Image (tube, rainbow, N blue to C red; front, top):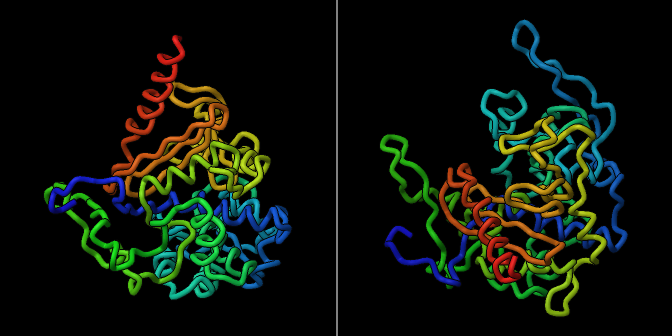
Length: 349
């Protein structure tokens, strides 16, 4: 924090993309209730996506070449980031540039976000490859349409309250704001880490454009640990079932096309990368230096991370608040090595 106050057990963090698995769990609650099927086309719930086009490149004059999409993406492809949508993260990419030009993430609500995304072509045909995308924000909008509640209301009733996640939400109330951590980033001139004061990072209720299922949550380490413990225990924590064990196992199953993997820097065809992707989690496909086969995980833009080992029924959550901190993954792998090293020692191995 800017005043050098220490982090405490009740410090509230921005978890950014660690919101994605929470939204995924919320959507799978509705799947268990029969509200949708994995192979449903997204157009069943979002008629705005009728007539989607796919980007094929630029012509000699620099104009985009667009073609009708061969079929609509499915809900499962939304959850595995294989639907083809962009995200606005790659400068110089036509599709991502459109996300920034249309200010998709400044949309006043989820419905307007969907309308804006519907005007932007897909990066690729559905089901072809993995591409990190706005898909989980679309999942959040799907929860709203299926449940009739706002995303925040639904997650509070079906995930946060049952698990005792008392400080997890899309904004920080005034009475808790003194517990809200600063978020840091490098000064563009000096490289020194400085607090980022922009309103978009403050999570005041009046600065929230819409409740973004892919990026919008804040919460404490203890809250998120209850969420990951629930996953490690197969969907139940302290006698409260959020998901069935088989549903958690399905979410941790690799859904990527054959020959496609995710590496540290995006999609790769290298099977040694060991990275698959399930339903809103990265999944480990073979035993590695740090993580065992079957573990699943994700992280957030300010350096937060978690992993779950369903075989040993353990999980780990790490929280920092530094943009760029997630680029150094040594902390993440080291956390797993330390945990498994301690387990080996305690078991006399």
